[in-house]
Image (spheres, rainbow over the protein chains, first blue to last red):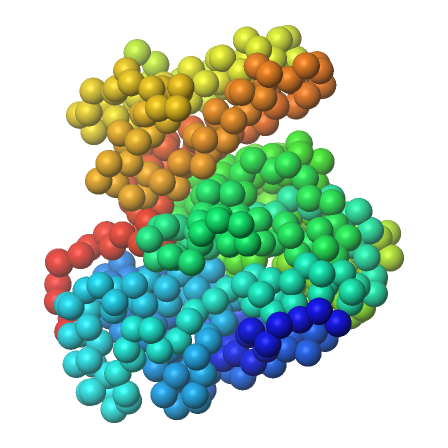
Length: 310
Length: 141
């Protein structure tokens, strides 16, 4: 079977969302890893990455919070790779890495607080932070997935929605836009590649990285609902049966505002919202229940049955 | 001058079914109007320049100068130009129509994002742009 040693065993940083609203993402990521023979070791005593809230008040505190996660993985667990499936966590760890490599002020703050907190200070370059998409793409790859498919996704029409934080801002992702084989910040394709290898048919979806208004979902729900509705309608207009997601904030935003759009605006959409790890898990022969499809708010069980996946 | 609140109705009034080429030109114009309104609201005279053959891309670049969050609509602008080219170059009517229909949703997304930014200061600022909203107001460390 095709695979590389790269990322075979990584430190797993689930982040808060995967312990709350995005539990199906957590379950399916772990189940998929196991099915593919990849090992995840959860970062011990991890903390919030600083998300939006802390970054908004004081970005250097967010840098510290993210650096602590990386410090534990590197200095206490001996890992050199941290895998974060949440776009927000992934983005924040990458931002912290960038800040610590380029900003003396951030380094000073991180050193000062780490000392006070009683753990080793994280130094830029000690770990590589990757997303769940990098993890599967670089350890198993498309050919490896094709060899392992037990239940093809059977031409399921999928719109791949990456959201914003997976690719922006560009400067914190130096490994992207490096030519063939690398991820693109303007036209990301890793999720498309993996799902196609599992038998899906990716549709031409023009809003792959468009803003879903996630950060304003509580303060300005109407704008968020309209932005999400437009994404859902664009997916349907592109012929998609499913929107595949790789971010818990995007995923719950799409699910919740799909319901709200129907209630508030009277606009119903039928496209299903499913994590890419759930789709790949089912393609690898795991049951829909095992990957938590029944836990999603967007009910896709009938579609999965129709496709022979549940 | 069109106001931001007029744009949504104008987007709805364009009909790709009645002629994809005309619709594509109308959508591009409306997308430019959206960015012009944003720039004028920020005391920046909208550029007449083009980038890669499109004024929309030049307007986007102008809006993004000093405002990283504006890149959250960069791909929407680029997709609009791409779909416009598809409409102009497609040989078959169904392809032309499909590309023009996608322009409807792209133009609407651009409108929603920018009008959201005009109503709620900071939409997109602190997530994908990684830009703190209250930097230096207080030092917590």
